[in-house]
Every structure is written in C-alpha cells, then in structure tokens.
Image (cartoon, rainbow over all chains, first blue to last red; front, side):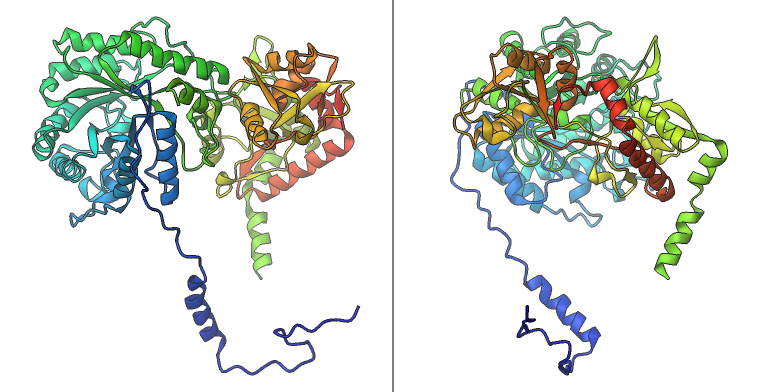
Length: 377
Length: 249
C-alpha cells in the first residue's frame, strides 16, 4: 500500500516548516490554549420545587456531600434521597473547610448543598464540627477543639444558623464527643462538652430562635472510665446531665447501630444494639428530661462479607426495615431515624462501603428499593 | 540516566535483602475469612495460608504469619510489621500510591451457576425469558437488577442466602443463579448436578500486596505466582478449598 501523505503532517523527506516560535514559547502558548479547549461546565439549576412523598416521615438518611465536588452529583444524591422518601438528611458541615483566619467564610459549597436540598423539599439536619488550624494549637488534629476556641466555634455556628434560617431545621453540635479520637485525641470529658454547649447554645439560639439545637451524637461504646479510647455513652450522658447540660440543647442526637443483632433484640447495659436507644432514653427520664425528643442521626446494618460485625445483605434489608417499624411503633419520643449512609463520593474499599444504599456511581442497592417501597414510593 | 537511578533505588531497597538473609517471609492476614484464612482449634489454615507457604517455598523461604484485624492490614504493611499481605484483598487502585499489587490469583466476582446439562446459558443475554436466582441484597442482586433493565423478560428471584439461590437452580425453581464466586463455588460442593460458567461475570480480583517501594519483592512474588500457575499448583490450591470440579471452561 502506498503511504498517504497527511496534509497537516510534514512528510519525512519534506523540509520541516520554519517557525518563528521557540519551543518555550510554543509550550507557553499550548498551556494557555489547552484550558480553553475544555468543555464548558455543565449548567446545573435547582429545577422546580419538589416535595417529599412518604408514608413514613421518620425515614431519613445521612448523606456524605461534604467531599462531593461536582454539583450534579450533589443534586442527584438529594433527588434520589427524596425519591426514596427521606424527609430529612443529616449532613456534615466542617467549620475547618469554610472559615479562614481573617474570618471570611467560603459559602459556595454549603450554599450548593442547602439550595439543592431545599429544591428537593428535603429538610437538613446540619452537623457542625472540625476546627480550623488557626483556631487550635499547632500540630493538633482537626477534631481538637479547646475551650479557648469555643467562642469562635459558637460565632461560626451562629452565622451558619442565621444564613440558613428556614432551610436548616436542626444543628448538631460536634460528633461523638465521648470518643477520645473525636475529642482531638485527648481524654474526653463530659464536662468539657457541656462547657462547649453552654457557650454555643445561647449564641446560636439568639441568631436563629426556631433552630433546634441537638447535643450528643454519642458513639455507642462500652469503654470504661479512664479508657484511652473513650467513655461509655450512657455514663457520658449521665455526666452531661449532672453537669447541667439539660438547659443547653433542644433534642438529643443518638447513634444507634444494630451491629450483628436484629433490631428487636433486648437492650442491656453491656451490649451494643439498636435498642440501646431505650437505655439512653432512661438516662433522660432519670434526669427529668422526658420532654426532649431523640433524633437518631446514624443507624444501620452492614453487609460486608468479612467484617465481624456484619450481617448478610438480606438480613440487612430485613433489620433496617424492622428498625424503622420498631421505632415508629414503640418510640414516640424519636422524631427521625437517619440511615448511615446514603452514598459515598468514592469507594472507601473497606467495610464502610457496605453501609451505603447507593454506590458512588449512583447504582441503587436492593436496600434502597426496599426502603423506597416502604415509604410508599 | 533515569533508568540507572531507578535501578540503583531498587537495588538499595533493603526489604528483599533482609527477607533473604532471615529466610522468612512475614505474611500479614486477618484469619477470620474462611475458606481463605481462618484460625481455630485446628490452627491456621485456608487457601491464602497454603498459597503463602507455597510462594515462600518457591522463593526458598519460610512463611511466618502475623494476624491483624481486617482494617489494620494496610497499616501493618505500611509500618513494616510484615513484608506482604495475603488475605483475600481486592485490588484497590486508590491505594496504589503507597502499595503495589501482584498479578491477581483469584477472581471473586459474580458467577453464573446452571444445571450440568444446560448448554444454552453462558452469559447475560441468554437469560431473557428465564428465571435468575440471587441472594437478596447482595452484589449479584445489584448486577441482576442492571441486567433486568436490558432484558425485559428476565425474572429475578431473590433468596435469603447464596446457598438458597443455588439450591433453587438444583430444584429447577430457577434457570440460573448469580452469586459471588466464593459462596457459589462452596455451594456447588453440595450440588453435583450444577456447574458454574467461567469466567465470572464481574471482576473482584484478589492479589498479594507489598509496599510501593518493594519492587524487587513484587517481582519475586509475581514470578512465583507465574511458576505456580504454569505448574498447575495454584489451581490445585484453589480447587482444594473451593472445589474446582464442575467448571465449564
């Protein structure tokens, strides 16, 4: 076959066309021009306002949109949560991601989440946490929040509450403070956390009086006092009440994982299961706090094939639906049951992937379809 | 020049020299995953254990096993508590900045299981108008749901376990089952009237893991795996633990 000369490619025997551009200049030109060849970003609009249809308003999900970069994925996630019948989402809004030392706050990403949630008719429970580097001592982790920074944290939370008035219905102060890891790898104490609530609560309520402030979100754990890992959640909550916490929160966030037990299995102080919520409730009653509602902001079962605390995928579906039914039938004080977790932006390649309802590629798992049926969708 | 520098870096990596000098390959695993690795009254045993011993023998070494929890395996390797992980670990591209994987030694993806005499079903498109048994909620169920969007007459029949899905095929309640390769092959041990179609319809590759800088060790392990594949030893080990009897290649 005869070689065909490409009109734009000089033939090997042809003289190389002379160019006035030196290689450096060519590269520079290429660097300027290449970005212009990128397709224009997709225009995402919130679309017409939607409404959540559900026969079980208690159903909610914990989303993971904090690390989601692309706006269409945020929108798609919230749309799918709405279609599943989730009336609320719990989402994490890390203070450390947004506020610089000069006080300026980057609102673009939280605005994106809140606006799309509003468009889908899904209400938001916002978890606030993680301390910016400028608000904590050098070489401390993001979870380190010292008393010196309580006022800064309160100010940020109040500004957040004010900005999203009418859009964010609840705020959770911190996350699992009874774990040393979540308390900046320090010995956690309920007194420290209550001190934080005492600073944050009045400032936030002044900024947005109708906002429901949730405390706790304690990790279910059996760790005894002095443990390097944390403190038993029931002991921690008891300590919170004894330290005068009751006046500084409107609702209690609770994490209630079922692990390998069915949702109906009896609670016991030395056991971690779904109905541990009842023991938490008892602590509240023991301290005269019957009027305060509980919000289960994390719960669920895991179906990883080799995690020791996992169940089979079919059991996971059965237990999850059982838990929703149980909570509705037996716990009038529980307003929300949020399943951990709706979807991760990328696979974690660990057992955590087996808590989700939807894959990072937006493929629904059968548990999603079953919950959707349960809510009448 | 770059190649020379890279070659020098590899030569200076001390891991292989230390292994060779000690005569011991330190293998990290989480022995809670039968039939790949489990420790009980009978001691440590499983497919990965046999594989580790065979590789060590091929390299003129002895395998020393160190146990970790599943979530601590990579940390144990990163902190040099072991030389290699052999623990039914799926290749994870996200980890390749710090770790390197050998060639895969087993695909744990979803497999189709059909009656021995069935000759018309070998892939997804053959299932239109058929009944496909799956384990409720498992990855095979997710895959089957995706197929159902392309095959309008595919009926998905969920069961509470992979065993039950396979049994449904044996009892002619379903035309095929789609279950993970491990559960499916174990279930086939009790169902001689059935076979599985190879290769699996999804890919879930298990591989050995080393630290990213241990290129020489990686090369040695890959050579051993290649030797064992060519000699049939790898298939023998897999067959011993997962029954290789009913495959239609």
